[in-house]
Length: 258
Image (cartoon, rainbow, N blue to C red):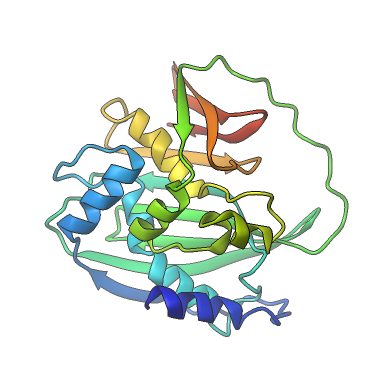
């Protein structure tokens, strides 16, 4: 699906008011393009090697994710849907030269204090699974805010103004809130914001070489990361793995690798 068709399909879901989940899984076999992989690695900070970065299969599955979420069986309109969490579990490294069998499905429609959540699950060749949790806000109490203690930063990242356009080009995710201040304002943001999955990928790249092949990396997306911006990355290794975070004036992402 081309970027223009993805945006058109997303816009056509704006009047959707479904309350049930009836989306059918969608699948495809995908070959990795070295040019595409190199572009992704460059924008996220990964080195180029035969093994695929942990987060890369997410973007390979993005066209299928959009196909499923813009289809008639998905209950929510895409505009306004908030990506609140992502968990990736990998049992072995995937490599550049292997065809990848990708299936995307949706599950676990459930209530949330601010609306309703659903999981979009991307499975790759039986060894990689990504679970993206989306929130459809429909009002209600915000609940008790989570008190997070700011960790000691281990690196300072300067996030450029064009990171949304660059990641959008590499990933196919050209949501207007990430591309330009003017288009972001149409959706209620004062400036463009960085993609949550770029922020996660940048964290994983910072830990490259220190994570095992079989790993689960889970993150929660907190405050929007306005671009351009300056943030601190922190990472601490413990007995069970790594805890990491990205902070600016508040938390943008908190995560763990186990």
